[in-house]
Length: 118
Image (cartoon, rainbow, N blue to C red):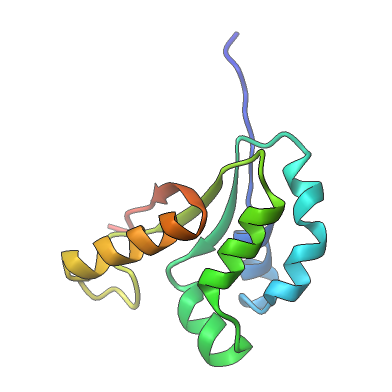
């Protein structure tokens, strides 16, 4: 029988589904080390749609969120999720996608999960 691994989605889908992405970085950080020690294959930390919510409504810096989480989660790779479109089902120019991925990696994201809505 093959190995079964789990990815924690609490900080991405959990709070997205329950609180409309309303969880602040300050709310996430106290549990980060516990999630890290649980033995997950990865932790989904952010999605492309979160950036607008973080900046406009929560007054949070989404890249700082990733950096601070990465400092507390040293054993488990952080993962971001995105689709073909970065926001609102509009085609994203390749240069914008490349910059976004570069900034994610520079701040601590180790994996990207792609979900294609089409």
